[in-house]
Picture 1: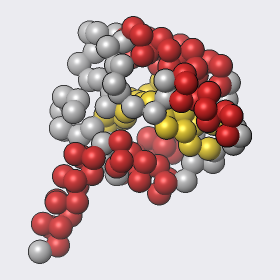
Picture 2: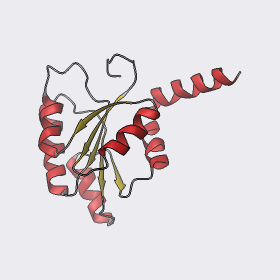
Picture 3: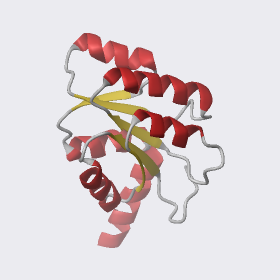
Length: 144
């Protein structure tokens, strides 16, 4: 997992809309450290910057222009040393053929908008199973 001041997993949120603040708040309340990028270009710059101390454990790529997202995924996969980092594309598209394109572009998962935050939590727990397990142990211990 990413090294950060809190030993929490780091999620990079790439969102070209005004949902960043809400998504950041929900993720932070769920225990994640959040990095933000406002568009695909900024996401690529952040992801390929080897001088950054924090590296994302997962990238949530929520873009209204999927082609920008696909290009960003290719550049992140090929140039940032983040080839194995899960990338989740968030889009309005719901066609099965689009899902195939998402996976072919290098994304790990696909979520349709509007994002259900309970669904997102389950998805992140699946992509970051060690963190999900640690959180369950802490909650169970706190209840005893």
